[in-house]
Image (cartoon, rainbow, N blue to C red):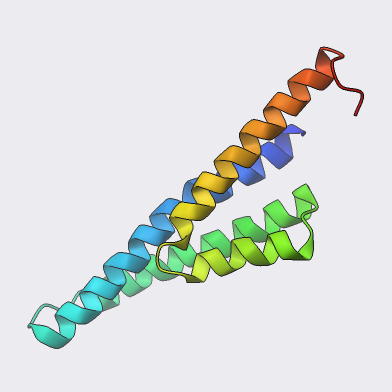
Length: 114
């Protein structure tokens, strides 16, 4: 895996958890808006919107660089629209990056011919 691909996966990974947290906070703010006088929906909506747009941009970049199949790309996109999906995306992307590093080191040491 080259450095640009690793960076694309890392960016997607780093934005996935905050995006999930912002989504959950937006849901909480929506409930509070309807049950109390507290209204933070406009602020949390903007924060979540920015993080979601970043997630989608980084997802497109990672998809382009990693050459994921349609199923894998769709899986990561679906995780972005689920309330806790970002946490699962972060964990899976971390594992994927670790596996790529292990495979790269194995190729460098001549253990694997791939």
